[in-house]
Image (tube, rainbow, N blue to C red; front, side, top):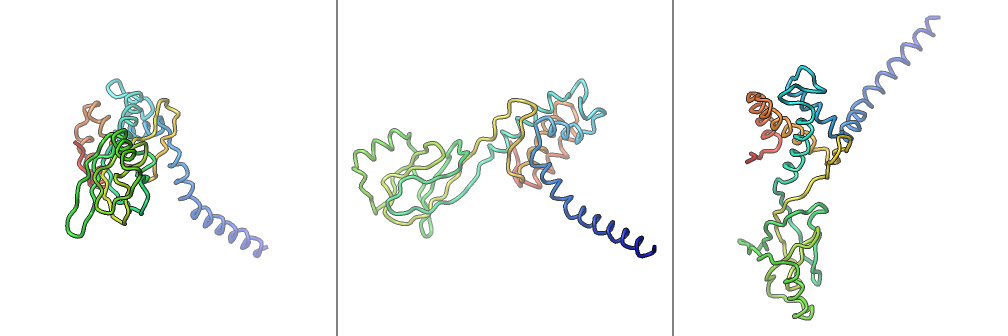
Length: 224
């Protein structure tokens, strides 16, 4: 009889331990599929609204969900930076699958860099046609953005490092049930930025200031 009770207790302990292990993963899976509406409810909750589903007359759920959409665009609009390494005979290089605007491209030299002139893609293609696709070992004269990539002219014939500054576009969110499909690390910045926007509309300056500090702490970027 005592052995039966001991077995049941041991089984409960094992099940509890398994649950504790799996719980964080369950939370992450849920967090990775938040809809616009669900993130809007979190915003109203952050603002300590009496009704975290509907909000109030000054800041309702419609405003909170619009704040989520706007915040998503804002967070994706923050300039990003990366470097690419050229390869001999290769003219085009992927920058980002969500590339929106290539702001700057600089060829890195030993102690200095050369900022490349950016031209329309048609001008880049015309230069390529006139050169007969000949590689040039001397230098890269200019570049162009086309789609998600950068194209260099003349075609590189050596290995160089090019530093890029660019912006990306976020997911197109048109309904409340759209899932905000963003990298996991962007969920909190989007939530905080949406809370800031909704707090301003609600007239809750103290909450706006609080979440601005939280936003700055995790992004180390001060929005304009």
